Image (cartoon, rainbow, N blue to C red; front, side, top):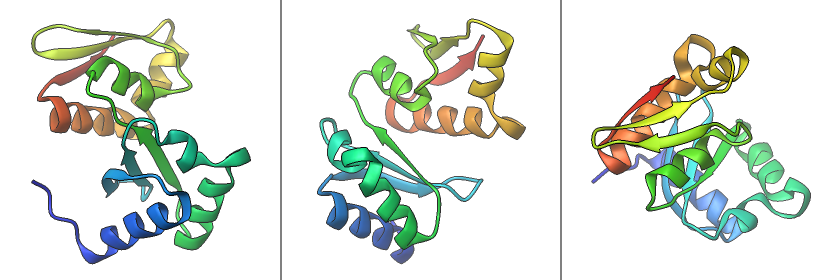
Length: 135
């Protein structure tokens, strides 16, 4: 079980108070982006009409934020993580495989200095105990 520090708890409280969405997990990635993993069905609440809730939370926190909808199915969860990229996601017994359609898409999936790849690998391991590979 993960223990939140006071700052992370404050981030969670602010998002939940403003949006009404329930947060499953929250962390700050290596780029300083606050990542919220929210429970299924709460993505609409979290975003708000025309993205107003996200904008308000970003303004209050004075940080960029990312909101990901959790799902028990690792395939759906990873697709939620990589939106709007529409890559094929498959799972074998030990890892999640994301198949990109071209080099540009693969670059977007990996991210600058592998930042997005590291975040995806961390989430796949944390929630499902699986590795992750982009091909």
